Amino acid sequence: DRVMTEYSEREEQVFLFFDEINTANVMGLFKEILRDRSMNGVRLPDNFVIIAACNPYRYRRPNSNAGQVAGLVFKNRAVNNIMLKDDDLENLVYLVYPLPETMRYIVFDFGSLLKEDEVGYVSNMIRHSKVIEVGENSMSDKFLKAIIYSHEYLRKFYQDPSVVSLRDMRRCINLVEWFKNMLTKRNSSDSDEDTDERIGWDGQARKKHKKIKDMRTGILCDSIVLALQLCYFFRLPDI
Image (cartoon, rainbow, N blue to C red; front, top):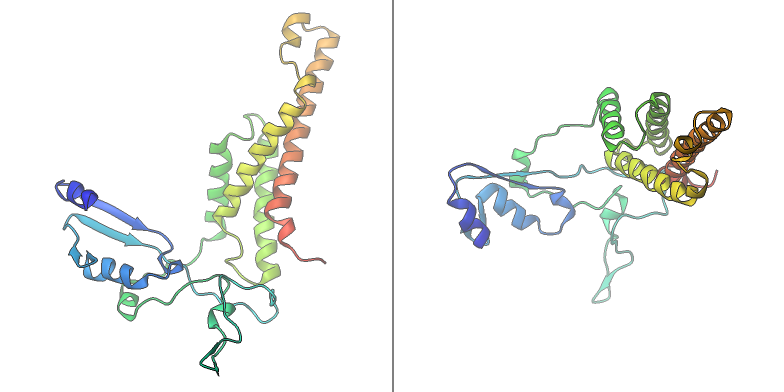
């Protein structure tokens, strides 16, 4: 009530965004907010613009991970000694609830990202994360190609376009940064950056500088491999 009162007094529009609304079992409330523009019977201010996103309904293919289930499912249920039908939600890739009939008329299907758009997104993610330093463009390109290939392989393997998403890309980049910092600290005793300034640029200094550069490259490679394994490789079943 306090928030509604505070923002309703403003002249500008206030945008409210609800993400993944059909993953919560309160679809009646979201229907009231989006269609009736009220919440628990209280009318929403006129300057409120309500936007929501929902997940698509994707059913598991017959040969894909039959032993795994999404969310809470009920099998062999009995009420008053009467056996009930098994939960249909078990066949979904992830647990989502049906939209009320009156909400289906305001749904827009934006589909999935094109490959070139996905490449552009992950490229920007890598560049803005600064996990790969300037001047290491070749390593950045290799990391980008590795992520894109991993996504394509998993989608083909599971025959499901939604098995991976931009979240996995972000998770992989964050893991590279974490592994890089952890491995750098572990090897800090061998990477004294002040050595070159103290002893000058003689032959020994050049060797030391090359050793530090090689070590940093090795740490980055190890970090990328570890992150790719955690995000993608370990999602594959035993082959």
